[in-house]
Image (cartoon, rainbow, N blue to C red; front, top):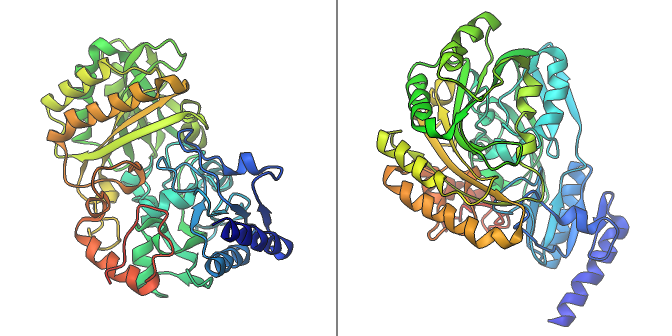
Length: 459
């Protein structure tokens, strides 16, 4: 074992001499920072981190891993809650240095490398009043969110992030660069749009852009927790008639000042004409006596980063999620009772409503199958004190167990954790799972890309 370890270490030293990116090993300057991902619960130590500056660097790293027999994890933004962006004793392919962005305002397209975050992409596209559906937290990487689906503020009008992909550059398990689209390797393009990192490393993503902002109508409105049932009932009623331009998220959360005060809140984005946006949010603003009303005109980039401070890097994270069959009175009451027992001032329950363009795509048109209007429920538990870990995890699991009777069959792959009792991947892909396994056999038969929510080859 020690001989094998020394051999890999020696190979890593030789690789670092010719690698055009930066090869970082334990003990090197920058290693500790590079190995860490967003979730503080994840504490893994790669044998080597290949910080890549180009697709060629990625290809070299993959060929090196194949040659010496190292397992591989791929880091884009590093936000994946399950920690699949890093690995113990293997090779982390780190795309963080790959930040190139090119906007073509005439054709409303943008090409961005795999290390770009939504804040960085929005900064460039909003210069032209253009945007694409992205994550609700701007520090999230574009690649991971898009390849797993891409719920976001613009999905009612413009579909999921993956629905806006026009082409994708991937480095496959053989270290070959492939540009895939509807007309070039269409099976691979279908599989990658929802199949996560199972089919290669996304080095460049090209999106269709849409006229958005720079000023939109949006923000957060919050009420005392003792009004939570009424607030979530209003949320449910409002989602029955939302225009495509509007997205609404309901939440039971804590005050951002750290006081621990529990709140019932809604966050919204209306990306249409400002006058229409003002009419669309009027009912929300006229309801009850909110303790905070932050809904109004704002820059789209401001909305997209508004929640960032509530998700600090390094905080301990433990999540559970599922789609709901319906948001019934009983489900609302159960959420309310569970949240009353939340042990951490950074814990929250989120209900994301999906409608409009996001559900007008056929379930089999992309690998992402969840195309029914409805609600995605997320228990998002964060804490800063390691001594709270057992209590926070236990509360999350108990809340999930209490909500299971309201759950639909589907799961959102981007929210899956790393301690599921049974394999959750079939539920994440539903009727598309069989085809995905067949395509995994075609494009990655040895399951080289397996540090992910893994789709196993069919043979």
